[in-house]
Length: 89
Image 1 (cartoon, one colour):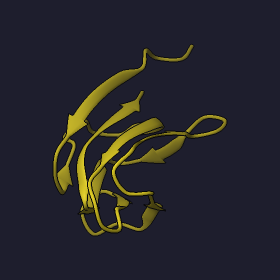
Image 2: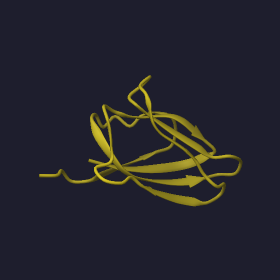
Image 3: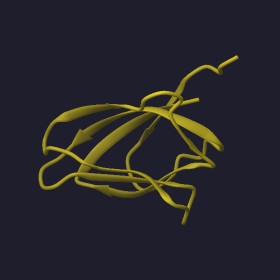
Image 4: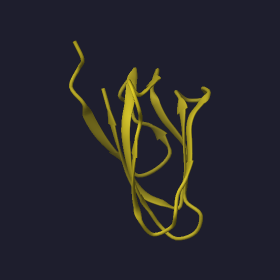
């Protein structure tokens, strides 16, 4: 049985503090410049998602299949991004 999807809003780098999770979707609000988001498998772990965005817009990134499994959602790069919401289970 699958678990319920939860969400967390983030406004900078660091741990989402949600423990082991599967990233299902990300919504991002970008600022000017060259927005970039990098998520790793915990602090210092391997990069699991590295995305560039168009400036001054909102973006929705759906993760296919069962999502991206991580020991902890850790945002290592949060460049020219106002905020993001990550959906996980």
